[in-house]
Image 1 (cartoon, chains in turn yellow, green):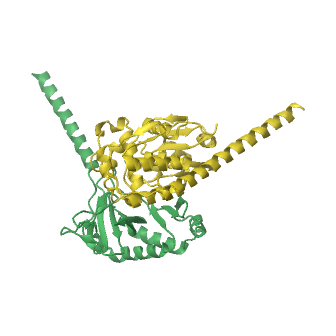
Image 2 (cartoon, helix red, strand yellow; image 1 turned 90 degrees about the vertical axis):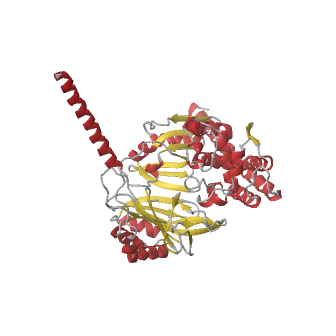
Image 3 (spheres, rainbow over the protein chains, first blue to last red; image 1 turned 45 degrees about the horizontal axis):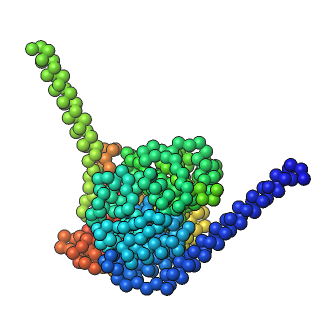
Length: 295
Length: 210
């Protein structure tokens, strides 16, 4: 057998192994999703003593919808829950059964463990979950409220230092804010996989061949972008703009043609396809976090 | 004495320049002239026509439309399907814009006419928003009109926001829009308090157009 034939044989073997792993992983996910839905179908809930304002029927319905269609996980219109939503979305995609078990335990016992981390939300957030108003669909997504409040209460970064304890409406402010390092900590804890990151809270990502680099990262696992949402989702026409990152999204695909970049990303409740130019991509991107699950 | 005098003059000049800079900055930061309370009534016919045209356009599927620039040349469109939201920016005169609208199943002629009508009254954004009453989903129409009168190029933009409901709403004695469930609680849309224009239309002035 000549060297080229051996090389070809090795490539085919690697490809088969990769395809088999991907198939097994996708099959496992499907199986976990079915198990999660079966568990929810067997479950009946009564009013919780820990979550006084959470409606058990809405809670269960929300869990079921999340397990069936993670894409609709919604962080609300004005809250700072986008980072927690990005983590929740990946958790639902990768481990719906684990998510459902965690949420049910949290509801029944007021505390729960996921991936060896114990989450015990304080009384203030337990009292508030279920009472969110005027945030669109989040108003009736009681399970999402429980999940976001629990993560926001548990994980703290330097942005939260001045507002460590929850008070009414603090989900709209710095209490719920997520800096890049805190976001990565959450990803590592919830995803139980290696997370790598480039970028800072105040300095934009400067990288040559950014689109190619993001495409390569997508081949290995999930990619999260930390970005300035006022560029991606303009809300005013002011000439003076804040140059700070404010939002997390999960990148699904990226391509470039004739200088136009087409991004598909999950953005708290929607999968969005958006076309921007290279200059806009460079100016909005502050951080890239990615998992190396499929290596 | 002389040196003290020179020092005094220099000091005064410094203080004066600091005061002037501070005044200039304050003027720059001040919001532009607010919308008059009767703005809606001055443009009622045009506003109602736009709302009706938009309702017709979105009867089968949702679309959000707006302008991203001050000259009202660049259109931002968000087209929603069951699985994905497509966001595109076009030049209003670009023929590929109408083609794209048709491709996604919208009536391009109605859409172009709506955008021209929006441009005429400086309406910068229109979309449908979901809101919840007793955990039940409902839709309202959200319309933003840009304030042209600004005191300086650096003063923040202000938008006259109108919300249109399908059902009559509840208000307090000051005209504040109330939540149906609790008649004393103000209902917020995009974290803003709204005020009565009539039983189905409310307004507010906001720093954000959406």
